[in-house]
Length: 359
Ligand code: ADP
Ligand code: MG
Image 1 (cartoon, rainbow, N blue to C red):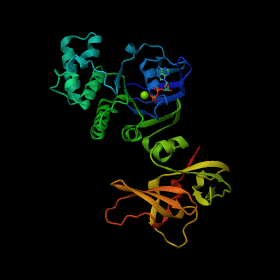
Image 2: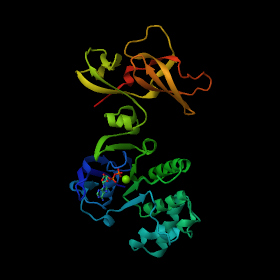
Image 3: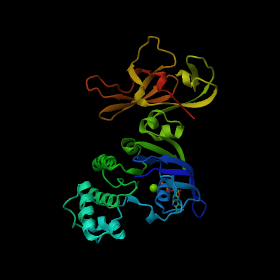
Image 4: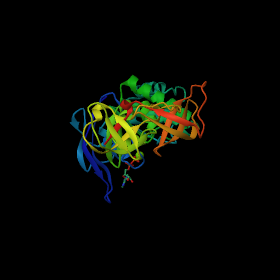
């Protein structure tokens, strides 16, 4: 498999839509790399430029260091899987999978052996003679996957491949695709708008917004240290406080947010002054029955539970603070302890190191 370098690539469609805007990223050999972002942010366009179905308006794409920006798609040795499978309806499973091998002019015995191996890989042995309409959605997507990997591509490109599957099957396919990718050592570029899917599957994620890359990082980096407000907001639930840094000290900087909620920032973040945003994940806040004991300034607040949302393994609380801020708090469902109910007075506690300062 291969590495991919996307060097300052832009795409302006006829009519002037700037679908991709100066995107730069390095995708490593053998990596599961996701392009994640809302509909219309330029994921498919980026993937199609890697595949060779679209030509960049500017910038370059390199594979293992070689410039392929203007190499035609069929000479790129890349496999592609789409959401709608794009199988040939009148051909059998085996014929569908054999397609790329036939195009390469391999002999019949080799094709048969490779098709058999690829179908075994996606656990479809025995279904060689079926037609797509005789298969479930999950099975059809496995055929599409077998067809893509049978040519031993240098890179596998997947555009929302699991989007049409129901949740259970989707999770199973996520797991299987990831296993297959690791087993084959494939470089895989995966497009999704589903943040949970990207977090679950990826080695690294590029979060895109409006044709640009907001942040590239591992799932834990993207989740725990989002660098922009967009990333913090798009990935999971988060509390974002806007504020102005008014004083600084060497230990902890006091940040006066809105109407009197004080967040003590970790020392490394305590430099300079100015307006900024701070994110705090709901599960990083501890919720206890309201205490009137003095609480640590900057890392606690009092409030009242407004409503609760039972998620099974966890409970999501919406709490209104005395400062009038509304805060989401997620607590694990321990099973034994009583859950809070609307109207309960509570105290919130958090660790300053869990506060993330956003750009
Ligand atoms: P995503 O896959 O993230 O949903 P796309 O790459 O499909 O985003 O689209 C990015 C932007 O480019 C959108 O505004 C879309 O309407 C526009 N776009 C996509 N394909 C074309 C095209 N062939 N011609 C003109 N505009 C396009
Ligand atoms: Mg798309």
